[in-house]
Amino acid sequence: MKISTKGRYGLRAMVDIAVHSNGDHVPLSSVAERQNISVNYLEQVFASLRKAGLIKSVKGAQGGYIMAQKPSAIQVGAVLRVLEGDLSVVDKTDTQNIGEKSIQYCLKTQVWDKMDSCINDIVDSITLEDLASYYKRINGAESIMYYI
Image 1 (cartoon, rainbow, N blue to C red):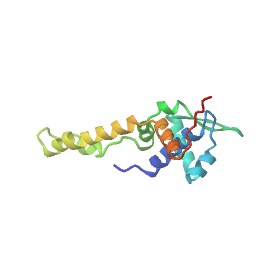
Image 2 (image 1 turned 180 degrees about the vertical axis):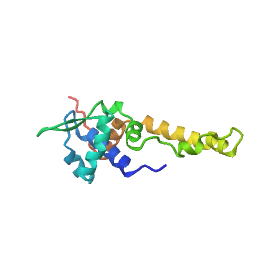
Image 3 (image 1 turned 90 degrees about the horizontal axis):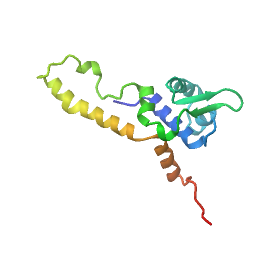
Image 4 (image 1 turned 30 degrees about the vertical axis):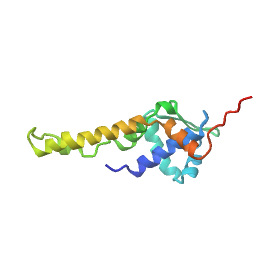
């Protein structure tokens, strides 16, 4: 399995919005500029994310995009599945209609299915909030709490 440009750019853009939105709409042009991605390409990616209900768009001068849910409720796996489809290491058609005593079945149950499970467990355990927090931390952008 290889994550396509659509999946990589889409995830980057979603994390960018999680980092920069602060509850407000983020213009797609700002995301495109920060991430060095074409606005036209991001529009195509965001159309899929909008249809899936992961983001909302608002038209107009103060418009842009905002998360449909809190970043803590959106898993990396959800974003990737919208943009990539099934996150499987082997095409499902290659493992259909195989005999239970075949080498193919052995590989499917002992290798491919276990790899798929691990991949899905990982991407479903990471939220956009996790990534946004990590990004802020490594860039020294976490809010500093002052006590008096």
